[in-house]
Length: 233
Image 1 (tube, rainbow, N blue to C red):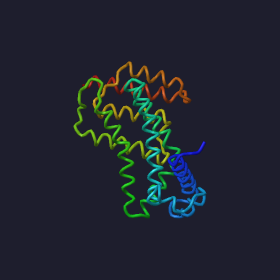
Image 2: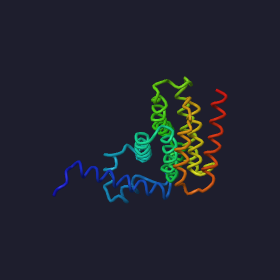
Image 3: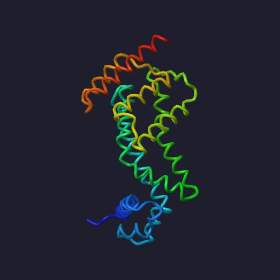
């Protein structure tokens, strides 16, 4: 069965992306050329420019694909789980999905250092993560607006923290525990209470964690903190 032109175009684009991704990871942004990418993809040099404006555009697509996959996965969690549970699972899986892609973050920083205008890639990628966080903050289950009027600032701070941990790999604790503490920051920032039922659900999820003691200790700390916060309120 003959392939359509669209199918051939998609196959070519995929081959160029795969070749570009492997070369960029191997030798870095500065030492990768369009000629090398097309040679590895076994495509004519001119075909590259039918799909990408330049090498930076290809990096942008790779970063977008990473962000899209992360947002798709976390979106499924949000739809399937209770609110606080979903916060924790979404943040945990966000860290798990983008931490292995640290090489892409390195490529982005190299491109920013080498090319004028590449900083827009970083800003756009950041916004791709900020927007769904902002929507989730605004969509309170009780229909009330959070107490903090600067929701975009909250979303940016949460995004910056998560991206820093994922980009550097320097998590302060396990992904489970780091996600738990970010969840608490999130809830407090937007005035979302953490109930005893929420804490019980988190304890149940931590039962399947690979860590035996620290997650339960963290939940206990959060429980005491939540009670103190409720008493203060």
